Length: 359
Ligand code: PMP
Image 1 (tube, rainbow, N blue to C red):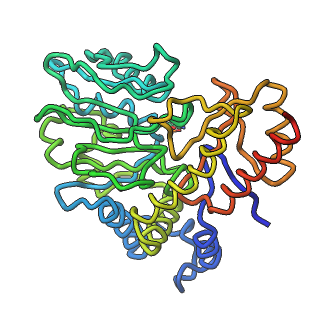
Image 2 (image 1 turned 180 degrees about the vertical axis):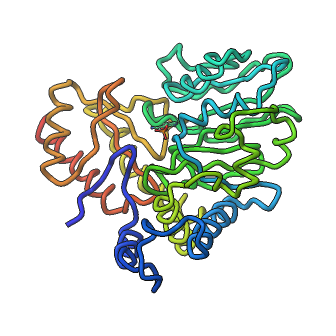
């Protein structure tokens, strides 16, 4: 039996995809070997990665003025690559600070000696909201945002408006492809695959080709997007198996109604849990309602002892991953793309029963 997986990442994958992968594990479509054992330079693998790159752009509604890459090093390496590539000496890297991951992003720019500016921050209220206004520096190289704060449970509900000529760059690790977005507003989008679109090991990076015009010169090979683009995402050995599974997840999303259907499904799942937070004085949501994340629902119980009991009783009932991030405590239910409705329904019923028994 599969359990209800509320892990924040690596996270639940569609059962259908896992079965497809299992079926092809020993002999991928008659090739006589597993994708894990294939040369990344073979024709079979070339087809897999080419399709996985194309599906990404298709789902995002982007044309050939964008390029999709699968790199390694996680979103955390992108925190470094973004300023290395796109912040020249005479410009200032701008960031909106919505908590841990956003903070890690601007800190990389700082560490390598780039000029940087925090254009807005929600630190004053413990990152429980998304800033609605910001002040860019003079001469901005770009504005970087984190569209979903996995730890605090906040999510941008609207794309930010930026002045013409200022590239918008987003870490979408934890809400990528979970909702319809006007991706054309972004000059670059990246994130770890391990939450919404696949297993750990691959990092998706989507870049508008025109952004490459402001790229710095003479960069170390592995940090240079130009080389990664020229080599079709295969300068060195890619995380081949992860990319294959991502391709299968993307096919699954397309087959099941694309982002429109994903969004409707994700809204419904999140509503099941938020309705309980709103109708109870036992559970307390930690985020201002208008900025609540559909992906990571964060909440507290009346005491830490009750939180521990809640998490362990949930586990006994086959619901895992409900512990909040170690830096903030409390509870968190991650409801990513592949989480079945039935898991959200099971959690909602458990929350009601737990409240009755422990109030
Ligand atoms: N950004 C966000 C929003 C995240 O949630 C995470 C991981 N939880 C990261 C970046 C870091 O990703 P990685 O582990 O792939 O480096």
